[in-house]
Length: 319
Length: 252
Image (cartoon, rainbow over all chains, first blue to last red; front, side, top):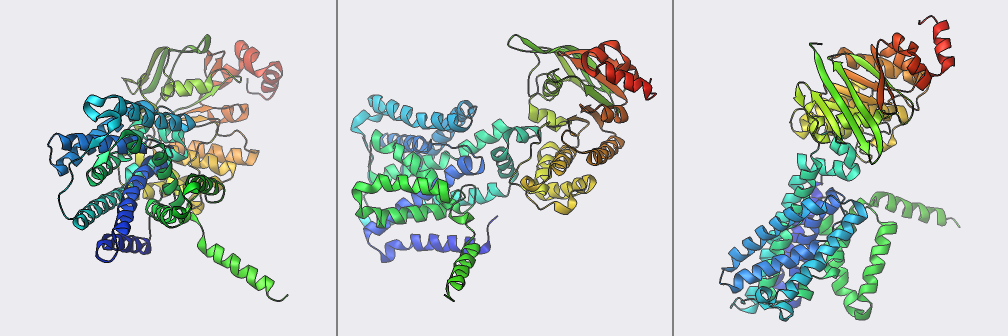
């Protein structure tokens, strides 16, 4: 459950991002698009990694397959919007088939299996040059509009996806499905014993964690205009997205949006100045997260923190 | 045996070369309380796992309410009315006590909404006496209360047969008496109970019939007093001393 305040802040955040084309320059709009895109990915990951507690690292596979499915459809003359739908359906079907196999694994084994999928997808795509263009990549037909209009268009599409991902999260959270997923996260055997069809629930969560990544990948391909295997199936992406969701608070409704915002803003405005240290900083964030913030930013008791700070001041004052 | 509810026909389970359960047949009748005893490693828990679909029998059949349910999965068993508690309690630790029970009602009971499931859960919590701490997280409960929570969770699934795997292990005498009252109250609702137990006092007071498992095989099935005097049972499980004491106490 989330508070009204949280919902209002989320709405405000969407408005702030959506209006960037009217008051900010192109690089800010670009950051806003990336923010919306990462939010979609983090919301998606939250279904399997947050609610269900299965540490999935397949985000980049879904994203990459989506961008390739969309791009291939578009290069064969399918209209852009329709290509996005094809990519979404394709990735959902892929996740359903893969989930039935992969979700038999638990814990670390599942994590390793899911990260392997990214590598396998990358290798298949880069070797199958007849269809995917192999290592040369694929050029996607560009939109022939003014650059500013194109930026605003893709921003609003990504924000639309982000709102859909959020709405799905809020719905699942209050629904039988979400309740069952939380049972699985806390004790899968016990969930089985109270009558949760765990296989069905886990596969559903896996599909939910995948299909919007596919859409986002296809939209990304249309926006950027060129994709290649190493860029589409990045191991880095597959690690970043769970970190964003964990940073905000895995298994919460607004956590993914909060975490993504915090992460991307830090990345753009702090790390950009330390290019050589970029990945080291990502590593440090992961370590800090695990040791000091296991529940994420949303699970911190801010009131207690303020009280503690106050207490320290008054204790130190008389001396 | 007109009102039989659960029947096992020559059920066996082998793990590799070990026959954990060997050719076991018995039936449970509607509404009775049956005790299942046996030494450690006799296959008692494995038997429950076979009935609830956690393991699939290597051979034999499980018949529940006239249907062959040998190949069912655990969640199907739960939905059809075969509920169990675990020897080691299995709560959803971060959820409230209420939501733990609501999970049983929502998934194992009749299909209904979450709000309705929580209402039902409150009734079951009141029945086992946990209604005052319904909003605490399950991880904060004491052991006796965790056992009660397990019971409430199973009851919320509106079971027809309830299998209690050592619900009294780790409880003191006073707590055991309270637990026994609860088991009788559950039985009064018409629920058939199979109780796995090490404490002979408990088994003798509460069960109407006794099953004895030894090395995976059923060596006795009958009246509790007759069973504890059975030579093979004495040899396998109870020991001479116990049998003598029991005789002196006037049970035989």
